[in-house]
Image: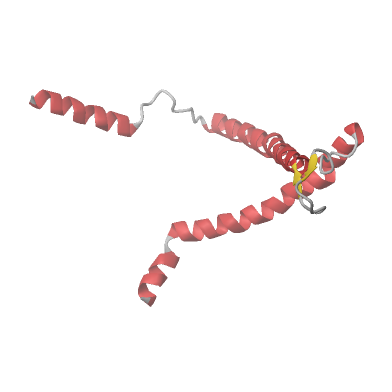
Length: 133
């Protein structure tokens, strides 16, 4: 049992996954800081407080603390979109440009014209089956 666990832990993909989770958690704090400390204050300076928490709030029943808070949901969705935009324009786009420059420098071209090897194999199998009949 211990031997099996040791083999499982020593697999490369388990270690890679663990590293990815740790790096992802650390990167999450960087993105949160970017959004909270740079992007949200800019938006607040332009349009005011970017929160809909007290808007579209409906009381349900007689209990005064029971609300459906549509505004809070809208705020969370907008925050998600802002974070996604920030990651795309601050991380993804520059990284794609760096990769494209590196590939051009190394003479690496996109292999879009090359067919998928699985499709080639399946085509060969299909043709072989047709030839048998």
